[in-house]
Length: 477
Image: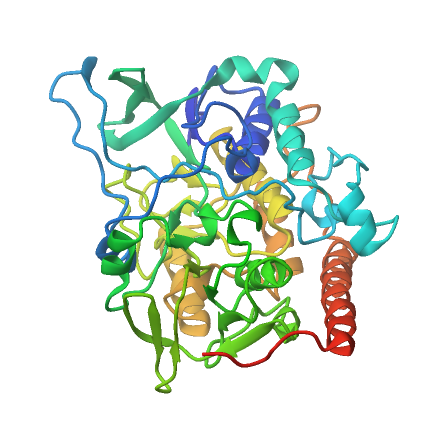
């Protein structure tokens, strides 16, 4: 147990993790003040969408060594007004106009709130009238609806960035910044507990490659991350290299085969494919698989096997993201994971700092729900918390079995064990209050796998049809 009931809670983020955290806290009916801080203009997190094209990439060295999202200096005296900060904060969305979910909606939705059965014409064309996938705007609205119900939106301060969270005595000091048209406005609020639900798909990771920064300087906008991909149209007739072997790279390379100059070059050889989706998308005859990049000179991409892809117009990196917590100096990220978290939720040094969403997962939204309920129960003084020694032992054993890197936070394949552990730790709560967590249902993971199977079948069907047409040259370097 935490030992006392918490009365003032800050929630960082109003994406899916933050949205379910708000409800979990509110339903415990013990917190007097819930304040939610969201740096975007509305709820939705990475599903919110952008009307403007994202800024061009720079500072490639810091993107490569995962230091790009540095903390801003805090004014000495708050509240304060300062000139607008020019430092990028990587708040832009990663969606493009026709993006759909890549898993079935059933394992995505929270247990008490269903995602609407609203199917796009494009999804029906690709997957049939019973397509389980949903357009990104459906998910965005789903999250907005969660935040806007029951007066929860009154708890949210939008366009507000949390710049520092630090423990001062028994309280958490939260330093905040709100952007105006010409100035930044800073102030401080105080809380008994903080829930970090800010996600970790914001700061792009781009590996260090000789000549990459020079290439972007000479041709601005020609080097981008999948986060900045806004659809196939800008690449019509262009020669494109897609770097990455996981699902974003697969989606983009596959998407470009009927728009870009073929073949689309995919840097996949020697790299591990996504464990769920595999590499079927890269088997399209309009895609040529290549080994890693050695270096770049001008418009030429040199490969480690000695070959050269010449006259390249665009290089798109679908190489993942970097975990960053610039606002939490007491919690340094290590090996692209957050250390010292028990069950990926409780900061072992102080159980009034909790995380929702610090996982690599398949049943992502549902895991958020279980984590949020556990966090809320702890702050209500109702959940169970092991001793510090036991929490440390749990982490040490997991490091031994999973490693001290991103795989540490991968829930697969132990979904049932994880869900049931959090349900046991959270408990049933008091009668008439709190969200109830049902027992884990295997059908959630079955639907997840079936959705992936349908997507892979779609790739295979289209690839086979393209092979029959035999219209795409398979080698041109």
